[in-house]
Length: 74
Picture 1 (tube, rainbow, N blue to C red):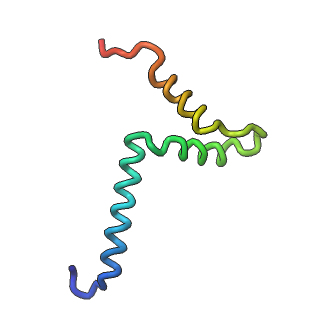
Picture 2 (tube, rainbow, N blue to C red):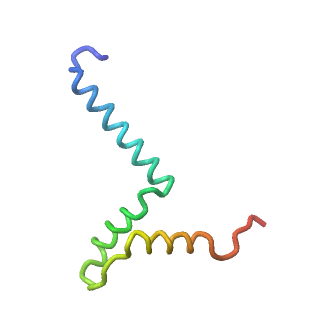
């Protein structure tokens, strides 16, 4: 611990760092895709009158998008 830094402040920095690391991990793995979709929908399409997709429908659409089509390296 650094001199002059209270232990509570050090714990807070560590907790913030851990939270950011967790959020980065969720984004890389795609775990937060539905939450990001809802945020985008509210921000950009709220006045359209349409309802956002359910989580089940969103997941099905994402799986179809990822795995349909030609997927090969050569």
